[in-house]
Every structure is written in C-alpha cells, then in structure tokens.
Image 1: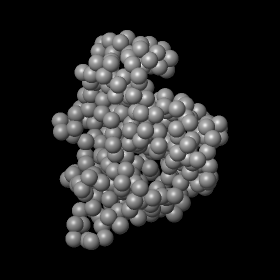
Image 2: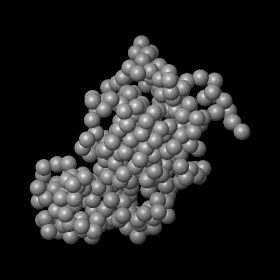
Image 3: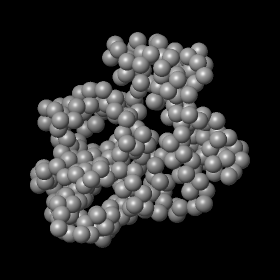
Image 4: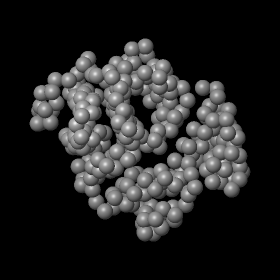
Length: 294
C-alpha cells in the first residue's frame, strides 16, 4: 500500500530518463553532477571530505569503499560519508550515475535532529538496492534539487534546498537499511559527538580516555554506550579510522612507512608496524606489496 509520500513522488513524474545533466555548484557547499569518468577518475583511493548521495541509473561497477569491495548494479543508491575512502575498479560502458555532494558545513546547517543515528548504518551499508518506486523517488529528489539550485535569483534558495532535504529525509527514511524509528536520545547524542571527535582527532589521538574527557564521561561509560549503539567498541572505531587511513596511504601514496607512521602520530615505525599488524594481520610492508599486485 502506498503512503502519502509515495503518492507525492508519483505526482512529480520524474524518472531516470529525464534527469538534468548540467552540473551545478553552490560555493563549496553543494554540488549536483552527473558522473564523468574522464573528469572524475577514481583510479586511486580518494578520501571524501563531503557527504555524497549517488543514484546509479544504468550499468554496473565494482567499487572499493573504505577499501572493501562492492559490486554495484543499477538501480541503486550509494550513501557516502565524510572521511570514507572510495576507489572505482571497473565500470561498464553504460554506467550512469548522478551525485549530490554536501559539505560538512551544509550538513550542519540542515541540522536534521537524529540524522547521525543513521551514520553507522550508512557507514557500514553504503550500497542500497532500489526498486522502481524508490528509484523514482530519488530521481524526483535530484530533479527538484537541481531545479531549485538553478534559481540563482532566489535569495532564499539555500534555505529552500535545506528544507527540501528535510522533507525527503523524513519522507524517505524507511528506504535506508536496518532503519529504526527510535527518537534521538542523550545517549545517541553522545555517540554522535564521539564519532565526530574521532573523525577530527584520530590521526593524533588513539586513546579512549582522550575522547571520554572531551565528552566529560568515563572511558568505561563511553565504551558501553558506543558498543550498545553501534555494535562496535569505541576502540574498534578509533582503530578502524587509523588503519583505514594507513591502508590508503600505503596503497596510493609514495610516502615511506616511517613517514606514514609519523603522520599518524606513532612514536616510531616499529610501534606503527605492530599496531597495523595487530589490526590487519599483516605488516605495512606486506600490505603495500600485496596492494600493488591488484
């Protein structure tokens, strides 16, 4: 049975064949662009500093997100978070994708209460298969965003776009995987803040106590909240960010292992090597050698 939001989507009558193809950029906060593999090659891992919602219209691709491989087949949606690392491995000739990119500042301005409760879900499940109804909904969203963003004479276009995002978030939230309808709580706000702090400080700070002090709670209580909310411990999240960054640098940069260790605030290469091997099962040197064989 269709609800009112589905009926609204149908009434707009947008589909994948009528999506606008002109790229739009609003300062550094928002971009709406069709993917062009010539202009935007993803042959090496790229760390994102924007949130991205991408609608896959046609074709298929193999892509690595946080260095984990996904086989994407249209119709589908990718939800990518700032700090994630993406690399395209293979693209079919007919691969067609439209992307909406939002800066951290813009996401903060939109300020949807509780949206970061979805952070871990989207972080762990960046690939969502779409049915015809949800594909039409996403095409409608993109078309409306493009139309409103194009209206440069409207002094309130940013505010209009902010509210359109809120409408589609609340109307289409059920399309996200493992969705719960729990309301934001004080505990979830602490976890949200923890995740933000980790993204900001993981290159320098790996101890749970640092983050607990920032949040004015004990390390034990922080670990308990994070584990209950995300299924991963606070230490796991910190380690995941550190090793992901290290793997990306080992794979795509010319930095020496010592330079990578220094950039991630390890006292020496040996300490970094032990940390990396404990987390991944192999040494940094072995990882770099194996990645060159791909």
